[in-house]
Length: 303
Image (spheres, rainbow, N blue to C red):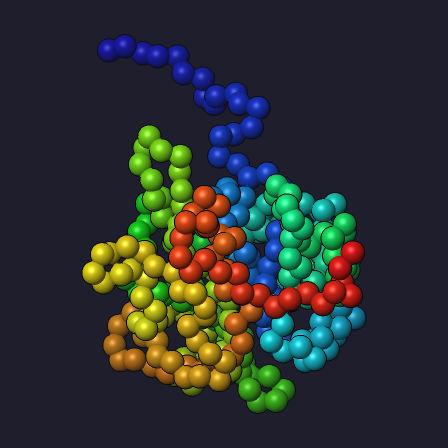
């Protein structure tokens, strides 16, 4: 038998599998409890994660956010960690980092032309926040889901549904949904890697469904949306939709764990419907129905 002297650990300057700290964007949902939903990118190691955080804000910041949310119920509010407090998604999802300094922005400003490489729209040189330099405390990890590139897109879409277990002071229980995305590797071993196709969809429901208990929604449940086809039934190719499939106020069917019977939910606002951000950039100019639907940032916040 031949024995090899293998060092206990190869001495890389950094481990091969790691995440560099950077800035991240979270779509905010909720009144009674506030949640941040991480914006994804399948082609970028730092953003290849679905992560939902239950967060707590300082009293004055929370009151101002809720005031703005009441004024602009359909607008997208984005929480970002500030550049002086960079962090990795694994540090948040793994509970190593329990708070960060952040800022909250309202809407999305279009990029300059030409768009700089690695342009980040919510920064001190481009935009003004509605709430700045606040300590964001992470109360709980609601969803931690790293992408795996060998997982193919399903025939129909699946969603993660969650919300607080109890009703608010108005007697109305809240719930939210985000699609369970896939980041399929589309290319072969001798080609530059391309990842997709899928969309990042973040929405609220009009109210929590009566058929799901508060205990289950607090933990989060998985439902399928049979009306949203992910693959062409004839060719098997992955498809993208040009716009969100659920109109605010409309009722649609889901199936708990993907099985019968169909159950009804009522849609609230969609805060993010994006495919141009999450998919590999080389796919954007050649793929039909690429879209970025997010509320516009008022120009008073532009610098």
